[in-house]
Structures are given as structure tokens and as C-alpha cells.
Image (cartoon, rainbow, N blue to C red; front, side):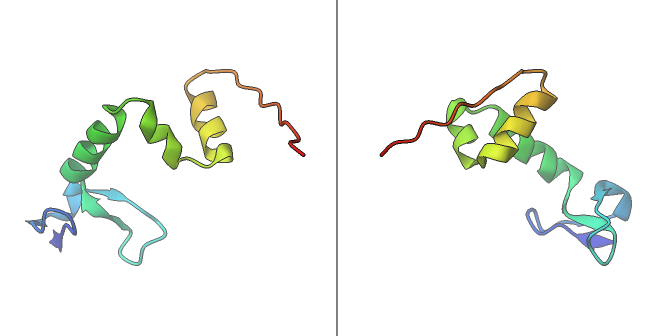
Amino acid sequence: MKQCLKCKRELDESCYGKDSSRADGLQRYCKDCRREQYRQRSGKGKEHLLCYTTKALLWALRQKGVNVKINYINNQ
């Protein structure tokens, strides 16, 4: 049994995703909380893209099949 940090429910370990970087090998939040978090993020308009770094945004768009090329402009 493990307590979800978001909803504070005590749940079985099968209710958590895997995370090899953590000592117990499980994510901090239960699958229900992670699903709700994803729904909230994906339901927003384009403003949620502002939280991405340039490199992360390019990676995310390419994963969705969008071919992106960035031209940098030197403003002096």
C-alpha cells in the first residue's frame, strides 16, 4: 500500500505507474490523479505550450508527427 501525494488515498501498488528513478520504483501520484492531470493539461488551449522549453516543445510536436523547423533571428 502507498499513499498518493495528490489525493492522499492509500492505494495498492498496482494503482501507480512505474518510475525507475524513485526508490520504491513507483510514481508519486496514482494513475487516476495522473489521468486527471493529463486531461486538464490537454484540455487547455495553446497557453499550456508556454511551459515547454524550446527543445521539449520541438520533441513533443515531432512525437505528434508535426514537422517543425526553427529559424533564429539575430536581433541587435
